[in-house]
Amino acid sequence: MRVYTADIKPEMEGQKVKLYGWVHEIRDLGGLVFLLLRDREGIVQITLPRKFVSKQVFKLAKKIRRESVIAVVGEVRREEKAPGGVEIIPESIEVLNEADAPLPLEVTEKVPAELDTRLDHRFMDLRRPRVQAIFRIRHQVLQTVREFLSNEGFIEVHTPKIVSTATEGGTDLFPISYFEKEAFLNQSPQLYKQVLMAAGFEKVFEVGPIFRAEEHNTTRHLNEAISIDIEMSFTDHNGVMDILERLVHKVYVDVAEKCERYLNWLEISLEIPELPFQRITYDEAREIAARKGEEIPWGEDLSTNALKLVGEEIGGLYFITDWPTESKPFYAMPYEDRPEISKSFDLMHDWLELSSGAQRIHLYDMLVESIKSKGLEPESFGFYLEAFRYGMPPHAGWGLGAERLIMSMLGLKNVREAVLFPRDRHRLVP
Ligand code: ATP
Ligand code: MG
Image 1 (cartoon, rainbow, N blue to C red):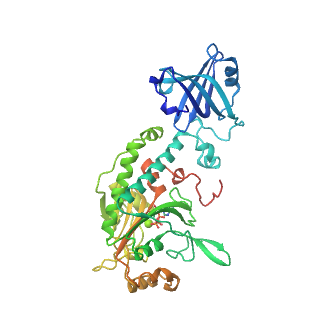
Image 2: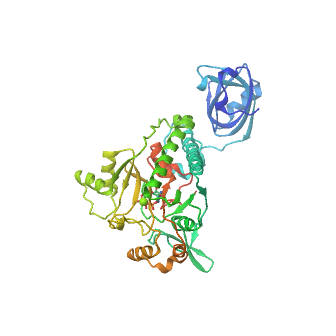
Image 3: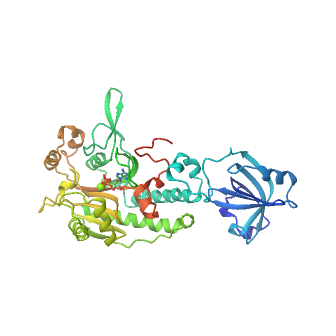
C-alpha cells in the first residue's frame, strides 16, 4: 500500500494511500494545518482541516517537529493549489522517530549554507532535493557506463588499491603501513589494466577509487575520486577515443531521457553534445592560448589559464590530441615518425580535463627506455615489465574521472558537490 509522493496523481482522487517520509515543513494556520511530507521521490502536501481529521491526528500535527520521520495513511484529493495538484487528508499519522531541534542545517532552500557547513552535516544536506538529484543522476551515469561498456564487449574488473609501486612515480602518493612493509594507496589502475592485456582479456574496464595526495585545494581535485578506466587490445588512441566519445554521448542521452525529474530539481536542461567531438592538437591549443596572451613553452603541460582561454574559444566537449611525449607518462606511445609527440589525448569540457588516454608502449625495450628517461627505476616495475616480455598485444586506454564528468555535465561549481563524502586536503570527516 506504500506509495511514493511522485506516484500520487490527481486521477487517484478518493484512493487510500500510505506514505513514509520526513516532515519537510509545517504551516499552522490555526484551524488548518499544512504539513509537507518529503520522501526520496518528492514532496506532497498533507492537509489537516480541523473539522475533517480526528482530534488526535490534528493535535499531533501541531506539535510535530520538522524532519521527524512519519508514516501517513490518508485519502488522495485533487487540489489545484497544492504542489503536484494533489493533497492527502490523513486518517492517521504515526511518528516513527522524532527529530531533535534546532536542526544543524536547513533542508528547505530558504537559507543557503556554505559548502563546508553543508559537508559537515552531509546526511542532512543530502536530504535536499537538489542534492539528492545529483546522486540520482550519478547512479544513472554509472549504470550507463557499465551497460555501454558491457555491450561493447568489455569485462568489468577490480584491481588492487593497496600497492607496492607508484604507478607513475611522483609525489602524489599516500603511503600506508602494510604489516612490516611500506605500501601505497593506488593512484590509478594503469599498470594492472595493462597487465590484463597480456592476460588476454582484450577489453577490460574498472570503476574504482583512485587516491592522490594532491596538496593543493582546488574546485576540481579530490584526494579520493572514482575513475572509470578502460584498456583495449589491438587498437590505438583513435580506437579508444571513439569509445570514449560515444560513451560520454550515451551518458548525456540517458541522463536527459531517464533523469528528467532530477534535472528539473536542479533546474537545468541538458544539451546533448554532437558526435564526433571536435579534435584539436596540443600545438593548436597552444596557439589559441598564445594568441590570447598566455604563452606556454613547448613541451609543458597547458596551464589552467591556458585551458580557460582554449575552452572559451572551442567550448563544450572536445579532445586535445598529440601531446609532447615529455608531458605525458612513460607508458604513452610516441609517433613512429616524430617521437617527440605521443599518441595521447585529453578529453576536455570547456576548461576542465575529464579524461586522459593514449596508445600505450607495448614493446619491452622501448618501455624500459621510456621509464628510465622519466628518471624512474625499471627495477621497481618488476611484475609490470614481466608482462611485456611474453606476448603483449598493442593496446590503448583511458581514465575518465566520474566526478569531473558529473560536475561538468550538471554545471556544478565544485567537484565536491558530486561526492557523497569528499576527501580533500582538510577534510577527513565525515
Ligand atoms: P589534472 O591535471 O586535472 O590534475 P591529471 O592529468 O593528473 O588531472 P590523470 O592522471 O590524467 O589526471 O587522471 C585521469 C582522470 O582522472 C582525469 O582526467 C580526471 O578526470 C580524473 N582525476 C585525476 N585526478 C583527480 C583528482 N585529484 N580529483 C578528481 N578527479 C581526478
Ligand atoms: Mg591527465
